[in-house]
Image (cartoon, rainbow, N blue to C red):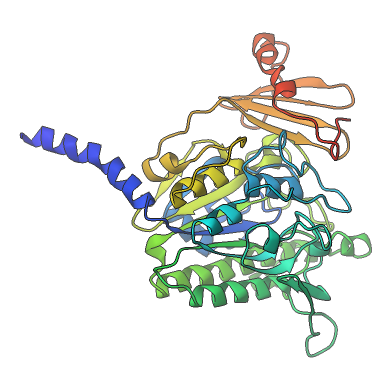
Length: 448
């Protein structure tokens, strides 16, 4: 065999080797921020908020530039993540009070991995069924749970109580008696305790959904600073409004805690067989008197939380698997939250459930290949019904009351400024039927 043939055979064998690594059933650590914008991390261009640990995570693996949340608000986005369905088929398609939970027979990432022998834990915000709904983490595949059930309860980072599995546990006040414990610190502590007990022979799935940097919406109704954090961190001397100091400090505090979790993976020798995924549940908020434009949280995108332009649904997303995922990658491969479940299934050696919308992105993670698909779909049920379709680089949006069409070419117009619906009526017309065929009726979330 000549040298060229030998090198060609090695190159051809590499993807097969990486796929074999994927069959070793890696641990999966899924970290989710709450309302963190596409432009809020240093690795995505943020210059004023310090995120050194997440920046290192990006450098150690893949930084995705076209990853999408499941929805533009919390509950449906988390439903898409857990069930592998987009919002046209998801059980939960919007934020409601009382909350709508998952169906009893609905597989989740956790229930599937648990069935494959994984230890499963969730420390943080659930948001897919409150007390008494029957849809709580311990009934949906998680061995351990500590945190918030109700997403409105999760607005308060100094809660009176949290849930420990299915038990309500009261929190003690700090020494000066004013505030309870900062919940996100408690989630980090639980995650560290969970990892300390893991061994290399038993795979685990750890879901760590922080509530940072979500605002306390209720607090913001009667004071200028509706953000919560124990201090201003490194930003105390900045000439910024207090709410913006607190916003930045909360992100840097989360970054520091994530750094502690990643360091423990290294210390325990678990990093080499742990896929670490980090993302945010939707675009940046304008709540609690915080202004998403202050730090340019949407980056070079238009819109924010509660919009279906990319600023509301395109999110930061990082993946690292030391020794398996090539470091230093920046990927333009598009994917969405509903792809996480089938990805976990492939890594764990399980069959994906029937009737889901997601596709495994293992080829993207392991070999850098874009997964071929038909389209992406989102719908939004607050303040009037809205829908969005992305197919290739075309994005079509329509919303009540008039259902006027907006068509954008994301390749040439990522800010979605130039509406081409009239100019390219052929494209708009080809995508328009998907607004009907992409969804099934859901009585909890009717159209209009």
